[in-house]
Length: 254
Ligand code: ATP
Ligand code: MG
Image (cartoon, rainbow, N blue to C red; front, side, top):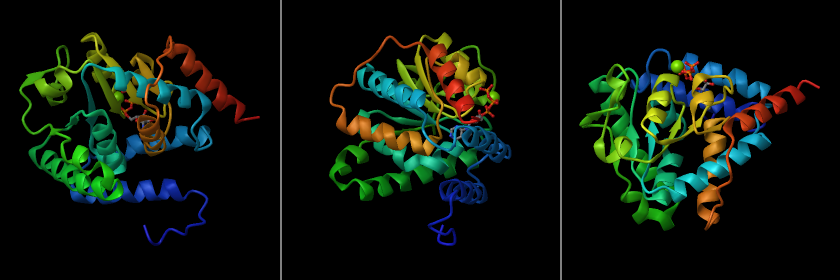
């Protein structure tokens, strides 16, 4: 990242691109991953590349639901591990929950690289938050040995762990796919997603949709989980929140 000037106005975006290019070289990503990221970037530009007020409310609601869950899990794919794996391990440590790798194009090689990257990121997380070293070391990384399937979903992305995604009542899934989101909702789960596109099927189907860039959002989530000892749940209306995001986008045009 050394060659991106500190003063570049779009530094964060360039760093993310570089992280994804490096992840692609390591074999962590599907071929379409960079296209998915590009679609996200376009929406982020419309949002002014900042966390909007409606997203702040959705992040707070997500923090509260995760904290109050009987059993929660964080589901990650290749882009998520590349952009925010370390930060999500910190979230998992704060929530005392596992992280499960679930990818659309599942190959043994890609799973192996993702699982080993997450193990390295556990080390990075401990260095960043030395006081949480023990909690971080206890975070279970699942995905290597799925033993059950999400009902009504085709293909390998339905494979999951009975001790992780399958039995969790609340799930945080950054960058989820619409089909899978529907299948998780049909299982009766509280599904919290992070998706820059307020019009996607994922955004419209989830219980709580955070329309924000993944790395920006997860930093706020960590702060809330660290400082908000008893986070309050509200009477959440996801459709209203998405409308408010769209209104904020429209105001950026004035
Ligand atoms: P859906 O499956 O929900 O109908 P889609 O098929 O259009 O939507 P996917 O290709 O499944 O979308 O996933 C990409 C989604 O992830 C896009 O909606 C994009 O906005 C979002 N996205 C990509 N990168 C990021 C990021 N860094 N932070 C947040 N969201 C992102
Ligand atoms: Mg999709």
